[in-house]
Image 1: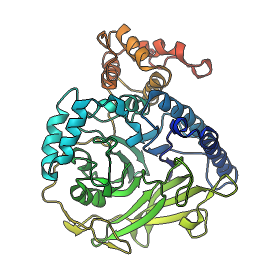
Image 2: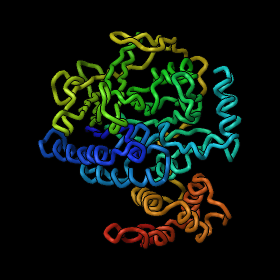
Image 3: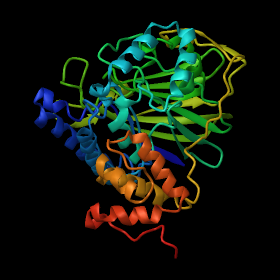
Image 4: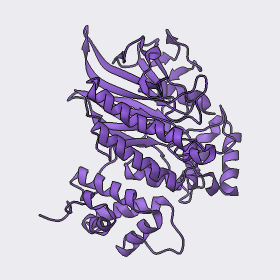
Length: 454
């Protein structure tokens, strides 16, 4: 079985307002749709994509209107490539946060974290996560509403990750681990002053599961890089990053035999074309099998890049002149102690990997369905339509009307909506919630209530 994904990064819906580049950027996004149709029509790839992967910077200023634009475009992409439109896995980038929502408290807290020794960061972040009104999370208000439509909102305030799993075959599955690199983020972002924290990078291994980590910023950007690198470079079979706008592929073989692939997405819409920066995206296929007695994960990447004919074509520089490149990764358990020095590649931070002091934390392989939810597809569709067609005030009023949210004189943070939505499942109110949103859904998308007892 082959799993197929589209990988986008740095789309920057809304930067046209600042740059006055509506025609160019909208044309590039239209050409993505045309390129996908052409790839399928030419028989290069099938019209069957399991999910869309977006490694951050969907928006420009983290505003609801920008995310609405993104959803409309993603709807078109999923239709063209034969992907369920609810199957989009996203993580935030630095442009997906609304910096206008950061008050003095949030700025002070971020400055405190950046001033801490790396050994002091975990305890500080853990204490901060206990605050129900965590100041670091306010800037994600519109992003989290966008992400929740796709089931990609943060697992919790203390663990801002999103997990999605896909079965490769009866023996192996892929687990996409989406990390938030922008908990500490403002106009002072720089290499070495971003923070991840152990609640994100310590993800326990799962038997027969291969992890694909998605993170917007590459490893060198983190203040706690020395702590992060051993975990990610010994647990992520594939690492997907964005932010730097330069597409790249790098297979790394470590001294203990662990094999890993780094894929830097490049940018679908960098602010402007220039030397070394152009429009790009990729198709990625995964399969599991055996070669010469070794168990392997095959990763085939079809990098697409803007050409002189003002449309997308294969990035033959990355593939040795072909339409795609196939990277084979041997599956082998790591030794008790390994080094991060690579064979045939140089890592920016060669650090010993030590496992004896790991923090073990319970992490589900996927978001569990709330109680009473028996139909995953129906629940995903309801969640998508709710966040797709209602603005925040309307969503909250609907939830108040159904007794799922207490009335408030102010617009509440998105986390309250998420809790109310989950309460609808617990109180067997998904059916009435479905009926409440149908009038706002376009007629051609309406369907019978799947939660009504047959």
